[in-house]
Image (cartoon, rainbow, N blue to C red; front, side, top):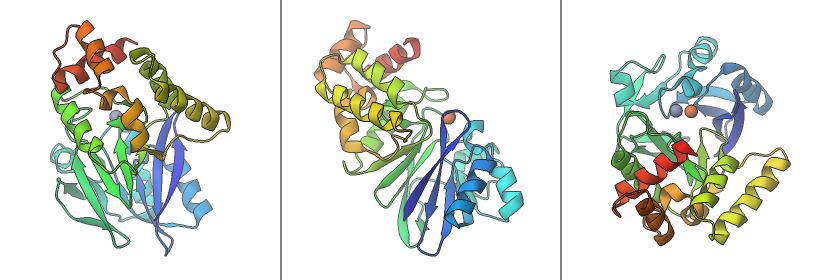
Length: 255
Ligand code: ZN
Ligand code: FE
């Protein structure tokens, strides 16, 4: 499996998964034209569309792609299908459902919090995490609760450290500024900042970053780190994971 990262809108990413026969699945096409350009450039025939959640900046290109390349399977969560909030959705997925990409098993994780229908796709050592886990950060908690989102982040944290992260937005540098603020003495965050700055200065994406690096640097995966707990406690939170996560998420909303 090959992954092509497709910049869309201002700071969104869609992803094209490409198999050996040049057939491809697009994840989170927020608009069609850059996806069409990528299909053309890669010489790929579109065979399905997968969505992580229903927000416009993830599904905005679905209808146009289906009109041009369809009929196509359009996959999203069972929750979003029930609520009819993903255009052209043909199948509603639940955790434990079996799915494959070119013979590779795809693991489906339900990760509610940012939205109640949020899901992640795990395939070939990569996780497509939408607006839940960002590189060095996480999405806002719009529909769920803080403990719910923390449980979802714990599911993602449990993936192998070698997992590569492909998320919905290039927020990495901003996220690292916040991480620095939460843990000013964490040298791993300094190193991660240099890594991100070099990539961005070269016009490259930070997508594909390793989960193992996140464990040391992402404050939203570090609810059991002493420094993060004491910061949350200064904001009046208890030390339990949901409360620590919630305090840090609220601090980010104000940052
Ligand atoms: Zn979103
Ligand atoms: Fe988004």
